[in-house]
Amino acid sequence: MPPSTQSADPHRSDVPDPSAASAGGDPSSRRTGPEHAGPVRPSADRPEPGSAASNSAVPDRAASERTEPDRPDPRPGSQRPSSQRGDPASVDPGALGPDRLEQVRLQASAAIATAGDLDELAALRTLHLDGRGAPLALARRALGALPPPERAEAGRRHNAATAAIRAAYEARLAELTAERDARVLVEERVDVTLPGTRRPLGARHPLSALSDHLVDVFVAMGYEVAEGPEAEHDWFNFEALNLGPDHPARSSHDTLYVDPVGSGLLLRTHTSPVQIRTLLSRPLPVYVVCPGRTYRNDAVDATHSPVFGQLEGLAVDEGITMADLRGTLEVFAQALFGSGLATRLRPSYFPFTEPSAELDVACFACRGEPARQPCRVCSDEGWIEVGGCGMVDPNVLVACGVDPARYSGFAFGMGLERAAMIRHDVHEIRDFVDGDVRFGLSFGTGN
Ligand code: PHE
Image (cartoon, rainbow, N blue to C red; front, side):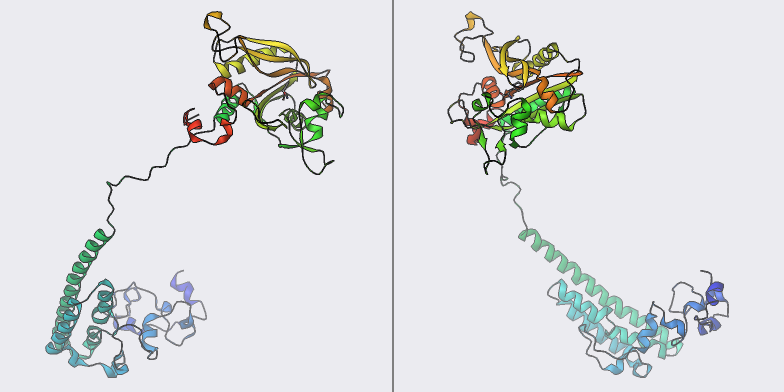
């Protein structure tokens, strides 16, 4: 804001600064005096103490130092007579005498030279060098009371004493800093040759790795991943999948029900309820792959577990045929056991697919060749049963509000443990849940 606008403020003082007069009245060179080399400010910025504008938010530090009543100074060395404060009557020109200054220098230098540590040195600096109550500061205040010729001489003496004390301070500072650094180096020494703490690497769980690998293969074909709850409602797990309350296939699932009886909740016996949830929630066409944990009331043995993983696939679109299922399963079989393996569909039955089939893949170990048999992988069958599949039963589509006259689809599902056991020649399903890191590591730490 230019000064002219400022002076239009009725609360601002337009009283000219007295120092302006001594500077020849030129507003551009107004200064507070020779000692003040601060920026040039228009006089309206420095109102007289007591004027309305002097109550502005920015305190005038010089003014407050002048008018502040004596208060005990909390800093070391402040126990000087209050008469030595800035008030002109207490100014003692004798303090600038050569002997007095020499005495100040000697005392200060001696104290500084014996400072025990950096904290003590910092306190001594305030006491002897920078503090408002330091003898040097008090002596400096007396300069103005001397006539000019003496003042110059005394000023030089004062400067010399100040420089000598500062030099003593700097010297001790260098010593104490070096001492401190040397001590810290010893105290905080780190032996970089000591062996570090090695954390043994774990491994990805082989089932997660297999599931992720298969999911990747389907995602690459344009499928989405769908998931559903493990505690599932009867309707999604059975009813909508064409297994009515009295359907005999229900018993083959050995279902684990969730209390209270009648809640309709159970632990899902397969991932197929995710088909239903998908058809009800996603717009058609639908291409999803559903990995997840499933439960059956099975006794544990080398090849059975009440908790196991499945991976399900579902495609519902216009014009989907069994040929699409076949081609998709071939890609799937290759992802599981390697390329170049024949697949076959064996007629089977599932309530939610019609027609239904079992997917077999040629045995990757013997390929059905008698010369490579006996074969531990397929027991000389030449084929490995991988999972169930089929064309989605129209009743399932109807239950999900999908028009079977317009849409058709296929579905398939397989057990993850079984696939992993065949693929990696694992003979004991419990190895997957024992949590022995050596088992996991035998599949590699990566994927
Ligand atoms: N849900 C069937 C099972 O758990 C597998 C399956 C899925 C079969 C999809 C056909 C289609 O045995």
